[in-house]
Image (cartoon, rainbow, N blue to C red; front, side, top):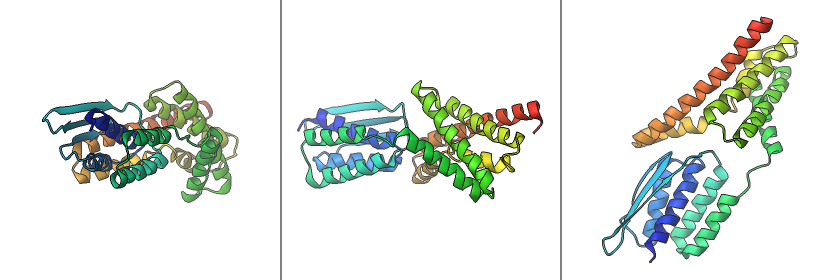
Length: 254
């Protein structure tokens, strides 16, 4: 048994799950199951949203430790689902490490949806949330434009590896400014519902759910990190929208 390969492969699996939005308990349990599948019962795993720390002890009593940072995180449930499926097959069939590495690399390289599809999805989210919050179809159509603008802004700023806090500020500013311009020219009747519907694209729903789940499960540090992350995102959204509202009201008085 090559324990260096085992701990590297298992940590890569944990990073795949964690970087794409999996819960802490799911990451740690999946890694423990992989260790046990290959006959290692001494695996100790400590995972938080930004880091995974793993140690196993070989039969000769030698500890092997690996620490991996996760600088970029997002939400890709397709990769989480495929990672979970691969983990189950590892536990059932115990394939050789090279086969697992090939499948892990294939999952890592799986393309996400194209930019046009993502812009369309953002527009549809804004459209239906505006209707959900009581806006009419005119408001919803303008919310579509605001939602599309959010995705375009995020896409271009992420290309330059901009800080997520500032990305959310600029994106929410763009959406709120478009809604206020529509109000200035009487295209949208209820700007509040347009802005709220469009900004729902930025609300960190999964992060909020995950931090509550982590806190309840006893993963206090992971829960507090995700809670802080959620608060920062909400603050950025409020700052961007607030700047747009203040500026347009100062200029046009709308």
